[in-house]
Image (cartoon, rainbow, N blue to C red; front, side):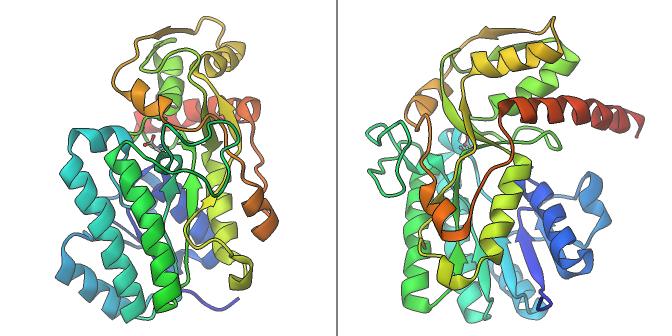
Length: 321
Ligand code: AKB
């Protein structure tokens, strides 16, 4: 395999911290520079880490120029729920940041770029069950609008500038190594922390709100598989649908109860209910399966078991620090 030099922007986030570790395994710790706007926590601090803000144009371009990267993962974004509270900032970071990265990749000859899209790019009139790859997209959140526009920008840079940019439309991503990051699907992250600490959880979505979800291990695998696939297999240059499981709050609570019988969930829907109601309930990812062989490993039961086995150990370690 050709030696790579990889930049991860937004490495401190939910996806970034685990993807960086996946990149370490694949390409060697010394070949990955993780960056974020704040100091690294936990395991991230053990690798190459730099403070970098994509919104500071000159510093960002200088950094890219001096390092000669071959791959760039641009993960810095404001998620759906937080974005609704500060829409202009969300638009600036999500959109201007992406265009800056795409331009820098062309100008400094970065061979491959990864940028995440989301199921938030779909909207209320999108078919809700097994949402197809190509369908109506009418997002209602600023985050979703930035994802839909971002997909079009990626496609444009591929067609008009020859940039090898690749993308996945993530469902709700569930990991336990970082705290929830302001998304609508993040109840399914928080629920595990609360189940262990309080044995109860108040959910901001109603009991029967089905959403497409994915365990972080699968999300990292999907991202690395996509980025390692030969360019001629990548027929979708906007973003690929990918999926692993769909469940509602009542179902994840029932699964947790199998491990923690005294666990109780209550429901108090807030503004995030309308966001969730505008998104698909399940996703058809057959294009990703056919083009580059995507296949998930974790369902709800396997994910719950894995988190409830590992999260208590992590919480114990952190309490000791
Ligand atoms: C969010 O809920 O905003 C994100 C997403 C689905 O992209 N997790």
